[in-house]
Image (cartoon, rainbow, N blue to C red; front, side):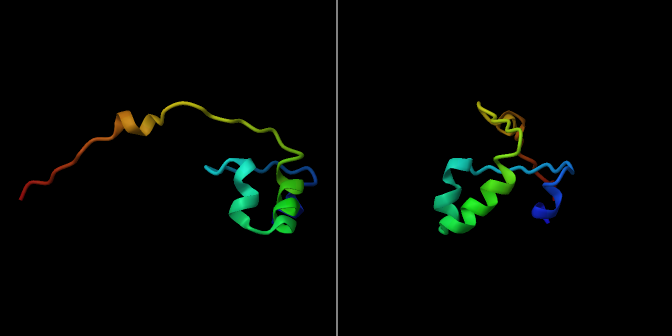
Length: 65
């Protein structure tokens, strides 16, 4: 699917795994190269830093019986 879309169609990919860890995670250098060539090298990357906003919004819910 991604190979078909790299020729000019917009695609949004998200990942919690940093790109530099993809080789280790996939455990196949050829596969990692193929994915990175299609996805990363022709993309705009946004890296987010800081604490998760979910931590401050987490609440405990109790149910009455």
